[in-house]
Length: 469
Ligand code: AMP
Image (cartoon, rainbow, N blue to C red; front, side):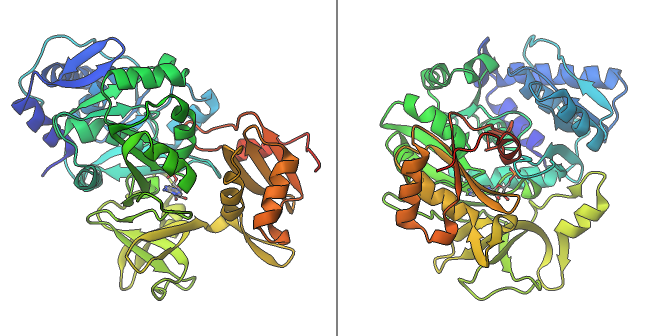
């Protein structure tokens, strides 16, 4: 039996005085983190928490959250991280969906140091956490992931990013997004440190980047949308930096801009339902759009199936299905939805149907061709909304683009100092007439989900004054 808790415990035993977590208030060593986690576990047991209980963790952005994670797992609990900045209605919905039994909204302060991190009541087949899908296109779903899947994913990503004791990982994602687990656990299972950014820093990208670089950050995960906001502040030529992108389409232009500021630029792909990521690839210099999302991570299987559930021939487009130990248990409290999306294939075993379209390239890399529900039929033409966005983002004054169909009409939203007229001209030079949106709206800033993806639901809902071009 092994879990991430066991792996962190090994680091506590071997380097108790090494820095483990850095936040605005200072540094916790591995030993100090272990002591604080033990206090959290003890407090939970005193409150009657039993193995299998579901604990909502809602803490400000400090190292306390890391101690809370480890402490809940020691007590055998299931972590449901909630973002304290989320609207109360979303939080209420999440607590209900996840069937939360206890709320952890404060933890004992770090005090003293421990030589051992107890692994307590944790087991590989137990559920480690429940996290919600980003909800960028619909209602968030409560995904349940076991310790075995979490450990598998952490090890698989570690084989790619190769965390080392001198690494400093930014922990800058909302704790309610599964990427935050990698920002914390990749360093802590390898003797490195996690740099937990505060809410105040997050509100000011210039100060945020200065703080991270001042603490010698070496790995940063962010969605392409979030990278856009950090980009102007990153020091050029910091070859120590590994820039990890994922969660949305990475354009070649953004990748090239990041390459001028980092030693390596990675494109990771995966839905929450397969435990954070399932494919990864290094972006090679000079590669153009569309950038592939890399190869399956160790232990993950990617199958491209047609509408009838049969594997397609090599290079043919179909729905991306994912298999392997990273595939989640299913959605909490939603057996029908679980049965619909987590399928038992007669020859290929248990697979998660992603709803994403893709094809395998001859070199084994995966090409992501958009979400199935974003391929639309308009006026007799099949239109891939992602393709319109890609072309729009090639315009030098467009930072972000989102194409949507509302009431049967194609709409394009753009963020950046571009005019609708200039963007229309650019689209007309690159796309067939059937793909040119009759309406274009330019926005100063797009609404984002808590996971820092474009919030398409909010974007469409806020569309009022259309700029006719
Ligand atoms: P979520 O589980 O809510 O974070 O969303 C997962 C979805 O984000 C995937 O199913 C894809 O549609 C999209 N996604 C994740 N990574 C990438 C990527 N590297 N490129 C394009 N889309 C991505």
